Amino acid sequence: MRCVDAAQPSRYDDLMSRNYPAAFVRWARLGLVLLIFLGLTGGGVWLPQGIPDRASWLASSNVFDFAGWTFDAIAVKVAQSTLHEEYYLNSSQQQQLVEQYFRLTGQIEDLQGQVEQIYADPSRRDPLQASQLLRNQLQDVEAEATARQTTVEAILQEQVACELAQQGFAAAGQVMPPVLFHFSSIPLALIISPRGVIREEASIELSPDLPLDQQVNLEDRVAKDLDVSALVVPLGGIGTYPTMIEETSSLNWATQTIAHEWTHDYLGIRPLGWNYDASPQMRTINETAADIVGTGIGSEVMAQFYPDLVPPPSPSISSPPGVPTLLPPAFDFQTEMHATRVQTDQLLAEGKINEAEAYMERQREVFVQHGYFLRKLNQAYFAFYGAYADQPGQRGSDPVGPAVERLFHRSLSLGDFLRTVAMISSYPDLLQLAGPS
Image (cartoon, rainbow, N blue to C red; front, top):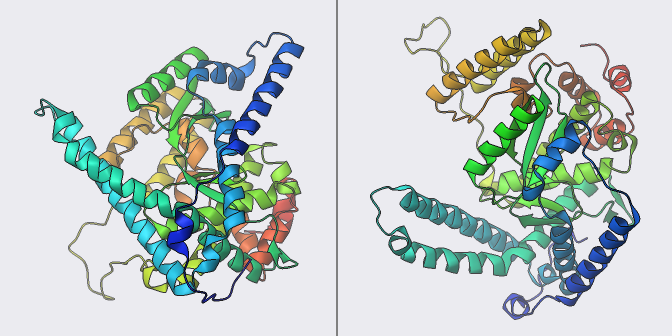
């Protein structure tokens, strides 16, 4: 790990022409196939039992290939660690390369949007021909971004590791576990909650290319067959190793998500991570802690290495003291979502499931009217987004998130907070450490 400026002459163009080894991927996949074959031939017939297994069975044709992705990502990281392309760039060149990469991903998003608009336009008789120029441009920009991606990943890995080292997570000059991630299309997740209570019963990763109409059909089928609440949601990152990070044009979001997913890797070999699935409260503690660390480390990376790209603070509109405003109060997403969650929890606690679902649908229409295009607002929505409880909206009156925040504010530093929260084995442990509200 290098946290100092390296002003060596650039050999970037020369290194970019090298090919990464494919033999490792082929042999690793062959080994996996043999292991799976041995496992299948040595066991009995599996029958789905319980909601998670039955939902997995219903979604089986659309599940994400984690094994294939992991082997591909490991091959990239092995090549990356061999070449160390980032070492041939000084800090200024590294900054320019990273910023250029994210500008390219922004162009990719814009071109993809233009192509999608052409295909969505019913007046276009031949959308393939009409979008030909745009698709050619898109192919060129994607190739340019791909040529830079592995070096950008290596640079960001070091920069995040440097900030983690400042928080005391380095041993013998190396952050443990090492920061490793790969930009990728991220799987979707089918989230399932019981209808009578907001609780994540299952999360099943799906192909990122699953069309929207098939997402809706899968949700409806699972909800009908299992009498549950179901929703397909996008993910920003997944705590595989290397971690999987969504391709994005936002450098600020990327740095925070890289640190968020590294936090899951760190917790995964400690009591808090071991107990991730022990209860809904433990899942919320894990995700809220990872959000706090991700936001903190990501902000430090931006301030240290990309100060010109630090997002401005959110503007606040207020009237001078004593002067009434003639403007109607602005619609606040978090406030309205918090009220929606609290009322939904109350209705479900009273056993009024149908009333709660009708109420959520009415509230969804309110959000849409104010520009928040929620496709569905149901128990599964709250079960997923409510676990990231460093924001007050979707968590409602759930006390877990505020307790994690109290522990953070009582900690001496971000590193002290993470080392403390990592040793929590139960919700009562958290309450004892966080103190009274």
